[in-house]
Length: 202
Image 1 (cartoon, rainbow, N blue to C red):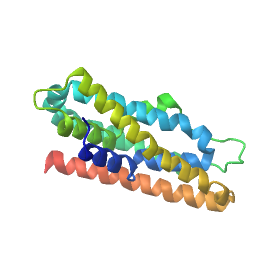
Image 2: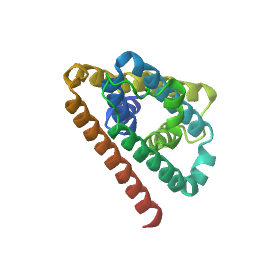
Image 3: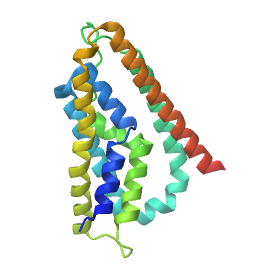
Image 4: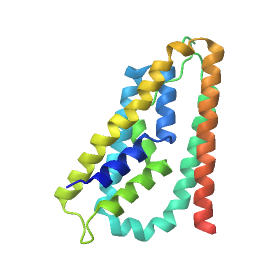
């Protein structure tokens, strides 16, 4: 049975600012809610796959976590910085050469290099898996509960971006918004990288 601690943890981790939510808000502004929905579901699918892997292979993941965590963080944060630069240079919604929103598969695959998503999946597996290990039924219940909580939380950010879209039709306002979001994402990437570097080498 999924308890209030599980609900609270997944909800807080899913709805607080992070790489996924900043990208969703930006995509909502630049492309609208409908074109951002595949990314919403892709993020949840990717997170569910991560959770299935970490819950099923908990012992293996934990034994190798120290070895793979920092290189994964470097790759993920580098990708986030690249996305930040791409977002900073994003064109007006009315521009002819418009970027494309992230698709379902891209949103899912992005979780492989998203440090916050891995942290969340590993913590859920550690905190909410029985000591004797997870049965298939328990694993499926955790994944279903996680997905049911995660989708509405990330959807909030896409809706927020979509609601801001009309207010940001003016080119300079959109450029300012994209610049702020790009700066926040870059700062998030650098903070995550510093935090992982300190944990790995301190």
